Length: 630
Image (cartoon, rainbow, N blue to C red; front, side, top):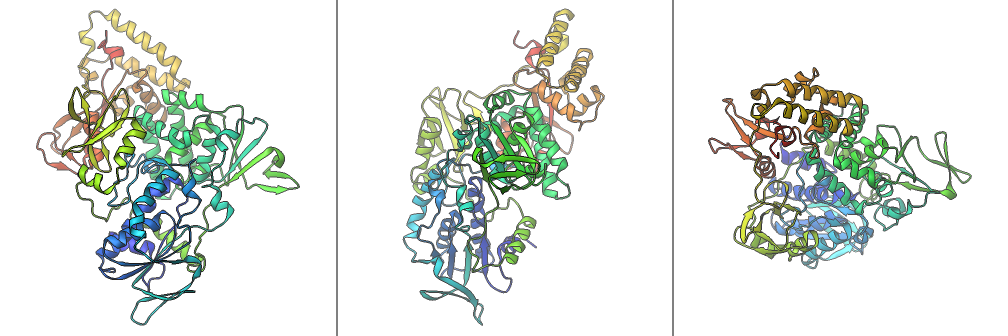
């Protein structure tokens, strides 16, 4: 089955009819995912010739996918018939307390980007209310050209002898070549509660109240984090943590490994939970861990209730939220309970634990029920859910031509100005090369692209391209010159620096085993030759510490020694091609390659699509031991 067939199969309700289904948007981080699914479906219908210019396509339902589907169908020349509710969108339009980000939910398998790169209906990270307002402004020119009929009036969809479809409603019959069901979610209090503005962020200041969050998906974890953190910033704290994890690469690798296990579906979940708690332990040894601990509300009584201890670490929630939940549990700011809440005689029971309801705030976040019960059965929904899980991931079928800043300005209604002003307090101008950010940059972390067009920054009145996925705005970083033990004037200086490094590690390491592993690595550095210290790999450090390369304590020790605050083993990268020719890559070059998906071979100039297979991390001595800053 090719990609087009897989996408159509994953959305097709009945194999004998051209009826397709797009699920509800359950959380803020699902918005970009829902748009991508909608665009992929329309592109697959076009590329398979299931829809041609002039064909009638009926769209039934609501949510952000409905706006995207209508716009995409009209762009390929279809005659769109629309059945939706009177509001077109639900309570999410006012959800100023929810944070939407295009790629945060896909980290760490995908790089972060604050802006989408869709062929239409683009947006940038912000509150859900702002995102929906932006999308509606772009969708309105399409929607004004379409006649709306009531969603509630639709009674059934039948198939004619020649394969076309008939939508029967209170207004009569409508013929269509294809029907796309866009599930708005059921009009139920439990479904709507997630989007309705509340005061959870401040309620946990009441130390007499029990806060009990029930659920294992992203909605439950986000509300747990809103309660337990003093400065969650509607969700931007998670983005700050991801950016800070650039300095904790081994925590990121643990998370990637956990997500691979989840994707394979072969684990009972204990291995995944263990990796997330270990990753939380790693970041606790980094500056980001200190920041997170300082944000936790230790005095509040906060509980996470789920069906099992592994339940919070399921594929239905974003990896960064799972990591932050594990961190809060590990630091005893959240207590984890197993069971289902039962309320009897004014008391909420969770296993043997009892919560008086007059002193308990119960937050239940369950999967969103369908809002299209009259048109799709539960059995069909379960079949579609399975097909989506088995379908291709990360596929992009729609056309993605190279974008110019001029195109974006004309199509995105000035969003780039709002993005630059709101996100960085900077101005922006358009050139034939891309966008140029203007104003005081300071130490701001700036993007490398906006809506797919490259970003430049004015440094000393000269536009210079940004480097990396996100970078502090300074001139291009240069690697420190190599300094080796052989260059030291005396062995006394060498030993003094090692002694100082050991004292620092002893105060930073959060476990005896990690401290001992760091000490073994420092002992290796003390006795190694200058040649050995020019190129240290995970494998060579594992051998030096008499451990395996996959040992958790080794990862924690290397992460600590490589962290910004200690900087004993700063990480570097080597490109090794099929002929074993080695060329060092800067972290900037690697991040640019990850952003574009390809890397030019440093020697031949040919494009290397699977370049990450040829990149090997290694370590050299940082200035604390090499004396570079002496």
